[in-house]
Image 1 (cartoon, rainbow, N blue to C red):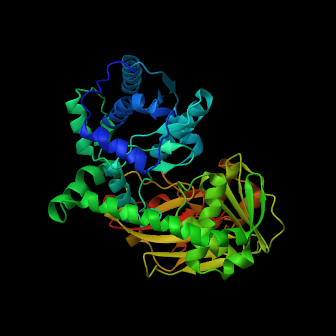
Image 2: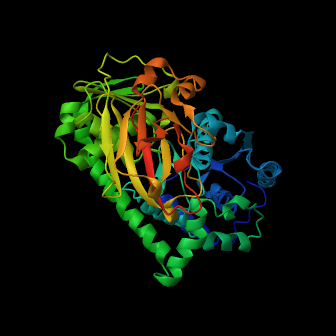
Image 3: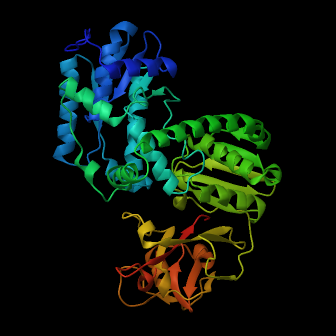
Length: 490
């Protein structure tokens, strides 16, 4: 029997969690459960409740804590708190330290996503090594509402507004998923439980925090006092419809697959091109998910880029997507693989193609988004119009995405390949530099220089596409209208 757990007076939240476990078929009698505990109120409550239920269900409970090494001594104190709490309760604790910031630099993506990847990987490894059948996490109904609203604002489809599922393979369960945050805080108070609070949860630079502390309270006060319940209900409806649609389109996925190999799939381009766009998107998304094991970072732009490659792209075009996914068209076949190394480091072993001079004109986008495929190289650029308030505080340009002050640009823009004598002012620098010298300093191979797209406004280079934008068209304090240009094909 775990220490310091009084089961004589069941709290209403314990009953609600027990009902959720039964209704969602989360646990069986005798299961060993690894509980992910950050030290925050949600995970502390989850652990405490599962220990209440452990006697009646003969559960074996363990604690897992990952120190992300992002907040120095605060992170170390959180780890010490969790280890101490586990000792007080008499349960084993598996804790480790990982430099998530360094992992993010190597793997790319946001810091939040890097932390999530590290946690789930650590939980899975610990569960396998220590013999736990289930991994319990502390997500709750307010988390679902926030995620749904965030994804709605990003323009997500049905899958994006399906929220957080109560269960997920392999063995992930969320016993608090129907609980509200105020119920969790009431449980903490009623049981006099200590917990730690991550100060970054109040940092308004983060999108989720602005949604949690500003947008949802405003919606609750002005439009719907039960907005959280409404968002959770919408998520539940979307999730069940997604499951139904996946069943309906399952045979389409099977028909599209020509071959399966280790770490890869081969799809029929002829079959994909005959599908309705909605069905084709679902098949491509499921194919990418099969290879990547999740769809984190996969956007509608990525999925549509694959479909464009199938329907309009060159016979030997190639896509490099997030998560080291490589998509290659080889005539009637579409090969999807996950590479072991960053795709920019891979040798270019393509079949011979024509890489003659090219020149395209890009008019001012009439809608919120437009795109163009460079048929000579198989690359695709998307053009999105943003308002200043649409731009996340952490959004920055990079090798594959650039943000420009749209009011400083002259349309139509020009897109052509590199020419001898081209000059520009690399972002963050003063004075112009020959593009050739930039290529040499950046160690860009000669064969890649010839096909590198150059984006121009009024005959002035604004972006050496895929490498560096020009400093003169960057976003400034007075910028109101923004043009986002993203490279999806490489």
